Length: 344
Ligand code: ADP
Image (cartoon, rainbow, N blue to C red; front, side, top):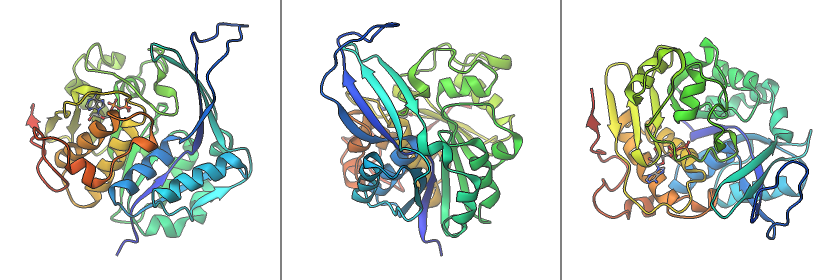
């Protein structure tokens, strides 16, 4: 019997956001709007998203002993995340400094702070959490050696989900545990041999927000131009399954036997911040509930769709009832088939 549907091991950041007329150039100072301080970080986002949906969720993370750390813990508790695994101290809470201009383009500096101190020893100390969680989810805003320790500490029968963001090349031990590996186009490109940050986009930031579509995709190591080609190339690296998120185009799921395109739900998007984190959390939860990859991704696409209709990251995450209330044209709740199209 598992105590948790989902354990998220990852980052918690305070997002410090100011709106500017123009983002500053070298040596330049500009005045911005009043500062908005919002809870963020991929780990904290995922945990909040899963718990809002009703998953029994725990977070293993590290924050500083400071006001930002308390803000993040309060947000997790408000979402009903079990925070007993959140360590405190060692460095200031991680911060993302975000300037947004009128066109919506942003510049982001991340100071990892305490996230960089979440250590393999912290994972070993949390052995009980790992042993009692049906699904364990991680991202890469914490040290890679810590993610490797998570993989080594997985309980038999539990499932590991990784969103390698910000992306770096992964070793075989971590890749072999991923079921699935969840990437957007930018992350796929880096894993397949393209240069990190080659597209100059915001994907390395705290939200991973992206409008990436299927055009002009990964070109590393002969991956080809189509998402199905990327999926095949990614599977060859060793994960048990792969999910490629495609923004408004939905997602592609592949497990080596079938490759299925899961359509997105048409909505009026106002802010894609944190959509990938909500998608991943929902997918991980539904996989743990026994759904197959395409069905779970169909549900996750509905969660992502609601998320992009609202501003912000954690504050935009829906409850299961809100997901079920999405207008017709898409399936209505967990456990129901998503109507995926088999592409090959
Ligand atoms: P990331 O933030 O990691 O780049 P995506 O932008 O691909 O991730 O978003 C994750 C998922 O959220 C998508 O696979 C899709 O299901 C949903 N989504 C994102 N943008 C939209 C959109 N404009 N309309 C509908 N669904 C969307």
